[in-house]
Image (cartoon, rainbow, N blue to C red; front, side, top):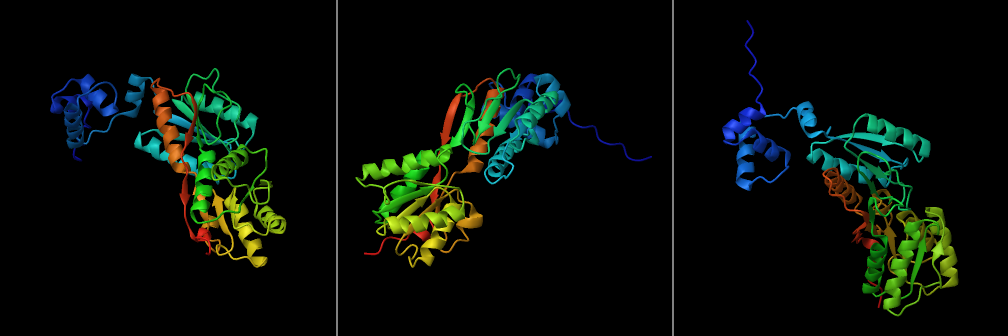
Length: 340
């Protein structure tokens, strides 16, 4: 006869070995309720010694939760959405949550279909990942589960949203340029109808105002999020204000195009003109010559934070409002100090 398989350990076995009640063992293992630290440690040691694996179905029946969440994205390109989703999945994995990923591809009808699908699967909550930082319509009204918005905030201030702090990120970039001795600083960015472009312009202007300086070129240069616009903007700016010695660009694509055109015009970067980008898109920021100093929006961290707040919302502890997450400056070769 084949050897008999050992019986799998149960929560009753764990409680008995730890010397606690079944209810206390369950609270300790699920991180719920008030359990003393030494008691929780004793339960964990017992579970490890017995190789205890909690039964997901039994746990969901007891708690009324499926330990499953939906991740709904509208970012069909993925350059910003993918880091946010990776960060969220890190947090969900640590919390032993299963993730159902749905890509609405920016289509409202497809999005509504996926919301219905996720609810049919009895998810405990949903994270909606935007394709830009522009406010988007809320889907929360009438849903039986909490929703957290990441990167693209909800238009409803009662929803929970997490976005990068573009005003503060831009301010940090311009402060860095001032610290390198630059004083004729221009700003070249994306389209005016993007909130990110407007907020980055506000952050840059605020720091220059504090320093008593005007924008080089006399205006913000708005255009497309593209290298082509960066090249064209360099031609316009260098003709309009040859004294410019630094440029803060609203994206790495714009910055890469600007560096290329500045070099063709006989200007050295960073010797004659320092250049800062935005996004820390490493395909460009590390490959441009010189490598770009740029603002990183910490999107993986933003995604992790959004997931952690979804956990809290599932427990009835939602934090309504738009939460602005810090960015940080990555300093590379394109912003060496100005020549004496």
